[in-house]
Image 1 (cartoon, rainbow, N blue to C red):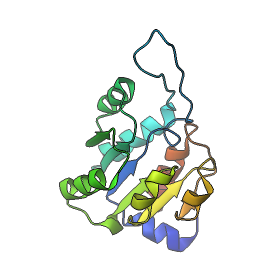
Image 2: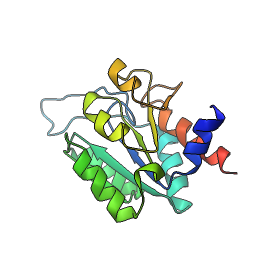
Image 3: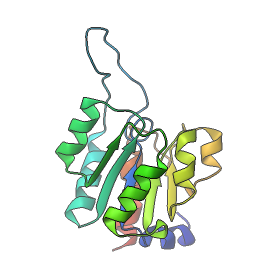
Length: 165
């Protein structure tokens, strides 16, 4: 990662993530007998989030989807902010900023879809995954090597952790 991006990343105090396509591969397993879609999360992304939390950083989820399995996953991890069912993400984003007492420049956001762009344009460090829409890629500081749901969040968090040692 370029040194100017590392300097931006070093300022981050609040980490916010979209779910589908970032923390998952974006695929949904549908069983018509179930009341919720099933998603698969990568254990390394979850561990990286725990490392942030254990180090005193604030972490939040802002997702357009609203499901019990997503809520359960992130409540289990102990994230600070959990905003589900927010297609217009700016309101949830501003709530997270206020609660954490940070500014745009001290915030990281990872998203992959068109409705993530307003937040991606505001934060101090923005990232996405290779499978993101081309329009999203035009508005981010960093595109991960790893795909969503395959350790992309861990990749970004590792850049942050290693750059702050």
